[in-house]
Image (tube, chains in turn brown, blue):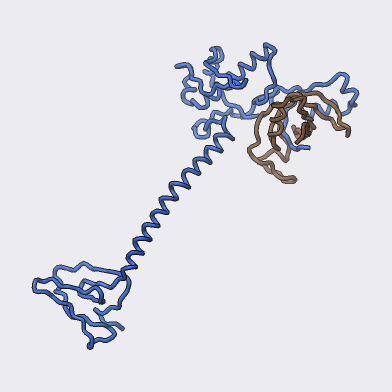
Length: 91
Length: 256
């Protein structure tokens, strides 16, 4: 992993792309970003911009780790009543 | 078919308990192979004791003795010692220690903040396990009403390690809260969290608050659907002047 990365943040079934850059979030914040896994809950703060492809993205300036995902998300196409990953109802 | 009282040589010893009213052992025994020709006679002494030759298969009333090879007896002792050693070795070096280490690894690091809450009758978690409106949905602990009085008290001795407030081993004031005394582990967790929040609140008021890397709540300004609804139509130039700053929380679903 280099000094920047993209990720998709999901809430209420809709996804928003975030852009995490080491110069913006700092060394410690970027270390936290590198420790994240799929399904983890985070909070980000930053400004909106559009990438070259025209996708709406949040340029992250502050990242907050909220909670770790203890159970693996189901695979694509599988809908589990015990998990909100596939349905995308994460708040 | 062998007659009663005639046995072949085998590798075991079996001695039956003679009864008191039984008759004395007869001195004459025969072999099954050459019965009648090669008689084996054990001597019966005058004092009532009889002498048996263990090299020959003999039998008698209530007493049955068979020849056993000496090496077989040694093998039996050696096998028992080896088996006993293996069982003790397995218990001492494998099972208990590995289970203990695994337990420490899982519950000591992954669920550090739970403080063994699962082992208590009252888990201490909030009924909805989530913070109400305008916050992200993360598990939180239920704080008793009596503990609200602790907010007014000054924080006990704390330790700063690398800029991080660490107060997990602080001692509660005596008689401050009965419910916290019943759940000291969760109380310590809550108390350390309260100190962290108090410190963060003070730092925020002073203006010296840094970014909170790890927290249990985020005061977001927008939700993801709101952002997509409001700014999907705007161009890059419109979002640059002026810049739109948002604070949003969610779940990571993909890395690019």
